[in-house]
Length: 273
Image (cartoon, rainbow, N blue to C red; front, top):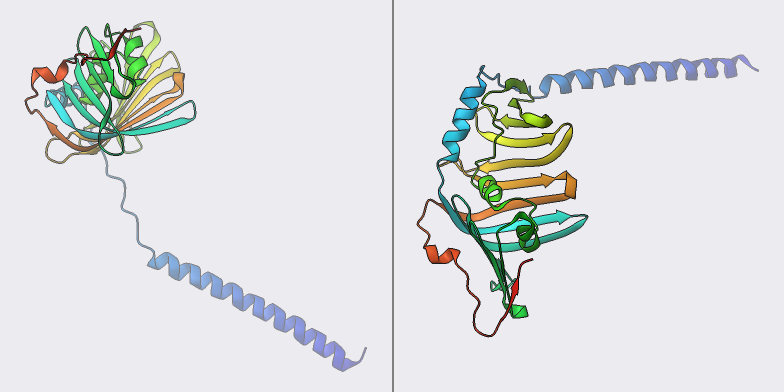
């Protein structure tokens, strides 16, 4: 090989090495510049120490704010892979009264369900049928697909979650939330999470290590703290329910007649179950 060819080869290798070094330097400089220009993330706010009694007291005070709720809502339900959603007119009154009118896309009621302490009733106009029976958890599930007691359902909607009898608990801080762990008899346990303002955002119920139910609260209203979104997850029956209030009034008077439902003339009356 001639000296010219050797020199050209050496020049190409030297040039390639120099280019590689130059590219590496440019990449390093770019990384430094980007890092220096990137906005710094503010540190997570520290949470002041708080006792279980204070958290439970705040929870009790918040729950007592509401005696009635009424408005329209979107209800989304996923059960065993099947998804359903419906717009509803909902009325709730403590301790165990509710009325749900399931609306068609045109705003007409396709089913009305009313529950009280001792009676569940449902009118399905399109089928010409009226159902009535005792207010048991099984009958409630038949009508609205919620595997809860009526009083429990009302409690969750009112941001007044059922609590274990243990008056205390252990408080820790996790992911920017206060976490309150409480133990009950027979291996029952509940885990509550509160935000930095000590407002309940999630509660989970366990039997031993099996999770039974999870309730999450979001979009808390500024004026009174009412959650606009409630999500219930029941792993044992592969169910998720999301209630999203579209417009809701709290503590307005509801006529007692709204919680009574009677069969209109000409419909078939059937007993539950």
